[in-house]
Amino acid sequence: MTAQSFPTWQASAARLIDVAAGRAPAECVIRNGRWVNVHSGEIIPGTDVAIAEGRFAFVGPSARHAVGPETRIIEAAGRYLVPGLCDGHMHVESGMVTATEFARAVIPHGTTTMFVDPHEIANVLGLAGVRLMHDEAMSLPINMFVQMPSCAPSAPGLENAGATIGPDEVREAMAWPNIIGLGEMMNFPGVVRGDATMLGEIAATQAAGKTVGGHYASPDLGMPFHAYVAGGPADDHEGVRLEDAVARVRQGMRAMLRLGSAWYDVAAQIKAVTELGLDPRNFILCTDDSHSGTLVNDGHMNRVVRHAIAQGLKPIVAIQMATLNTAQHFGLERELGSITPGRRADLLLTSDLATLPVELVVARGKILAENGILTEDIAPYSYPASARDTVKLRGRLTADDFLIAAPRGANKVKANVIGVIENQAPTRALVRDLLCENGAVMMDRDGDVCQIAVVERHRGTGAVANGFISGFGYDVNCAVASTVAHDSHHMIVIGTSRDDMALAANRLAEVGGGVVVFREGREIALVELPIAGLMSDERAEIVAEKAEKMVAAMRACGCSLNNAYMQHSLMALVVIPELRLSDVGLVDVRTFETIPLLVE
Image (cartoon, rainbow, N blue to C red):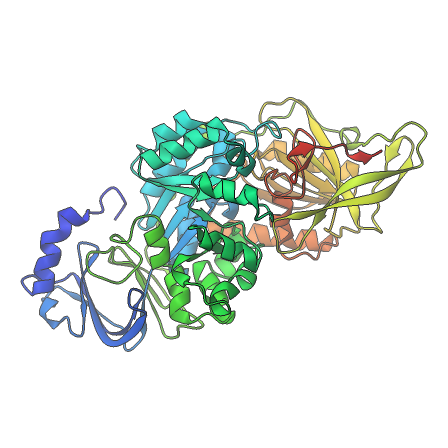
């Protein structure tokens, strides 16, 4: 049952009432479960659930009155009845797969609702790319709501994206049937300054009665933060400290706490509830960015809920943060987020709330997965030719394109260096002494300083911005290149060998985008991402296997970072402090200004 054919409550109401009253049989009855009631905070044993028209019709101590000769009976046998899990903020493209393949990967983990911000494809293909993902999401048998991207580019003047989004595009998208709100407002300095474009997008969203997503990636909780809140964003997932969560909730925002493949921001912030006693109703769990390997092997929202429980949160409160709280935030409390009459029949069965093994997944009244296995296949979605062949270089790159010229006669220089922080999105602004040889500034492998480059790939300008980075730990001649480069999605190349950097960049141009690892002049891993240079059209399991080889290849080059690829892909994101490299040059995100690579 696709989104297009799924009946509204209005169309189903008469039938739901008849089933609840015993005048008509349900299509399915789940018997003898422990009802995790996220409205009352109770766990109620001996509960039956009757389903009709893909919605819950009756929830109570006995649904015998709703059983007819054709009614399917599912024995819960005392297991917990948990609402289908919701991801309040995420990006499909970070999984390196299409929306369809993402759904196939997460359904067995109990995720039945996602709120996706496709600003990755928007930065490459513009409004047309958003429409492609919107339409694909509409075809799925689970709930995938789309937020209209707000920032393409994320920081005008500091990067050049492949397309531009503004108030006119936002206004148009708000009329699409599956648009739930505005995606994360990443240009927080623009909001703070009262930028007309940013405020125009927010106004268009609020005029449509929809939710504005936030993204305040600054540790400054003073006047800029208060100005940002006054600008209208209703939530924020960029907090990393206890005080970040507290400040957001006190100012009327929902604090979204994320556990993605590389972002571990739940533990510090959940103390606002477990230790300070803040009201948990305004906290939401999300993933933000999860790559295919995490989805296939570790889980999705079930992983986040388990993690939150492990930090001391009561299981039912953690489940509320991944179900009802999320639905309420987006104005969908009457549609989803709980096992109560009238809502979409999304639930999972589990034998243990703390470890949350997902033993059965029902979405819109239909069993989609059992014991971690998808039982209903979902047909692949076909992307058009216009979404492919998006990597455009002026010509083949050489090692000289990655040479950083030294000042005339210099033997040593001081350089601004991007410092990676493991398991966090922010970076540190470092200054390092580097030697000069033959007119070039050299890397310092012993000091863990290698090169980073952003190669323009949307218009074939031939522009290459070079810089230095520390934290990846590469200790051999190698290079890693990716056309996933949040958010303008040029090409990021990081390496210790300029020759390998050129080989890696040219290889991605040949395959139409992806991630590749070269070592000593030889390709040792490749993940092809031909759709906008961001997504594969292969099955999630295949992409996950290739991604695992890619991560292993990075490790073989000396990198021990947890989920180093996710760190790699964020190094051009010029809205998260402190230093980033864009196609324009080195950006100090604390001041939102470009700065010279070499310190005078």
